[in-house]
Amino acid sequence: MMNTDKLLVMSRKHIPAVVQTHLTSFPSFFLSSLGPRFLALYYSGICTATESIAFVYLNDSGMPLGFVAGSTNPRGFYSRLLKRDWLKFAFASLGTVITRPSAMRRIARGLLHPSGNPVGNDVAGLFSIGVSPELQGTGAGKILVNAFLETAKRRGCKRVFLTTDRDNNESVNIFYQKLGFTIERQYETPEGRRMNEYWIQLTDGL
Image 1 (cartoon, helix red, strand yellow):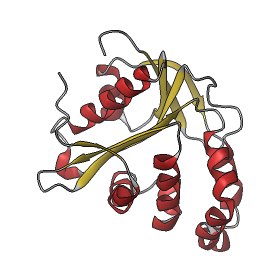
Image 2: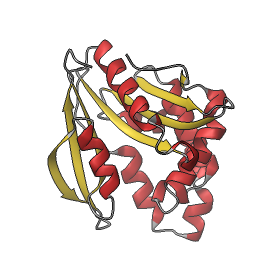
Image 3: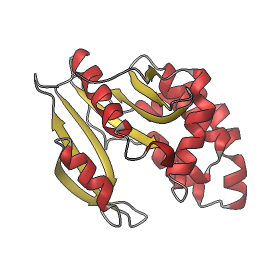
């Protein structure tokens, strides 16, 4: 039985801690380069959407230092967020676009995510997971992923997918493989990042 004593459904009050954990976990990623304000809008949108699945994991002091976030019926999820709060996202990314005009195309592609994600209420996408250094090695990541999978199954999902970097990311790839995820597709982004697309079948054992 999974220990959920330190697990909570993500809410708006957790967003500042989630943003900080994201920045710590992914310091060189493009989404992090958009800054805390953009990330706060992004995670606020995720945790308030009806199709979202999002949890935080607390440390011994009750601070949320780990999180997982995603949604059911993932195709078009980002575009639905953008459509709802497009003006806020525009202002939040303004600084990045001014200093790096080429970033606008990547922001649009990342948010609109036109047809790359699977569609259907029987599928869920795990978009993001982060655990601060303090919680690494404690099993927090496994608990967060299992909570996501169990919630997806209760909502009628049969499969869950996620993507992660193929190169210089061995520990993360091993982590997902140990949890039962298998690589079903490998591809390269327009920026040259080589990616693994993982899937897991939700069974009665979850």
